[in-house]
Image (cartoon, rainbow, N blue to C red; front, side, top):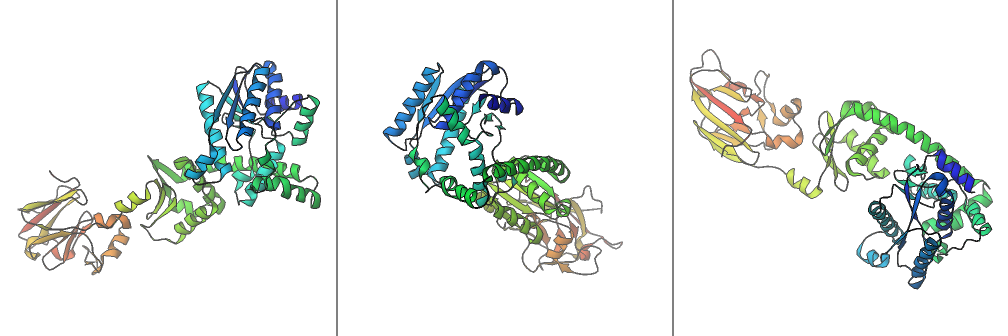
Length: 464
């Protein structure tokens, strides 16, 4: 088995000469065999080994004995060992999740800390071929996509799995032939855990009733899916460059191009983007929720995709943004304001961080795009500045007649969430004279007979 493991290490380039490898050893048969094999190969591979053990404190004295066993094993091999303990039962009372999930997370936290503190470059895990088959089946039952069905990788960042192509039977045979002792964990026999149930009941049932080669077939399927998933992921990165632009904690997706993509590309693109933004994986229901949102929702709408991630729909873009959902709703609630604008005079609109000035002028010239000049004789003073309200109508300059302000905003492609931030200047009769930054009312346009002029200008920063 040693030569087979050496071939796997070389095939997948799991270690390089000079690597310091942290070996995770629970005391069970798989990790004991892994440590022994790596110990025998250490000089050939040119690597150093460090043993790490975490006591989850599930089984009282029994788990403490596991720690002593691992320590004695490391001493026998003259290897340094790092040990830690954490009470998973206590964490289970304080946190949500299953005992196995919390234990797994804590184990990886411990390995990461130990790896950093001891200057290790690799972390070796004892997962084997049977574990791979169980993982694929477990992920299939959870409804996982290609990432889950591709199973575990021989090399994933600093983590390496030299045994991933070695069966549990071969590992046991190696231990028996070399008189190696190991510790048994009774919890591995309990079928209250799904993974144990798969190993103890489902896989034997499939092997005995459907295919004696079920284990190898599942592993083979994982290898095929993983290779194809790698290929399509590379293609997705190219699509992201064509469809998306990045702005700090936001991603802007070109809606027109996105809609033309194949459904599989859309799903992959979304999953990739969410990973880039939050390092979280989306469930299928969230992906389909997003697809429905893109297809049918109105401009300006938003949805919460997952914790800390919001999707908004604009006219030509979908915006993915990291945010606090409560704060996001607070920021996007309706803004209300109403001010009188004297001429000459100015108004600071604190709600939107803007200022509007007005004055009587002697000519009809405009200095910039945010300035307008109106026929003062056609205005019923005083002027009012407010935001939009239901039922507003407006007669845009050059249009054949009045239209709903809502339709005017839609024609101008003003996003729904920005419309309350567009000030309206109206006269005392309520007629909207100027949709600030957009257009004036046809009724107050300048004509050759205009003699009195009022100029209005918007500054995007209020004056203090």
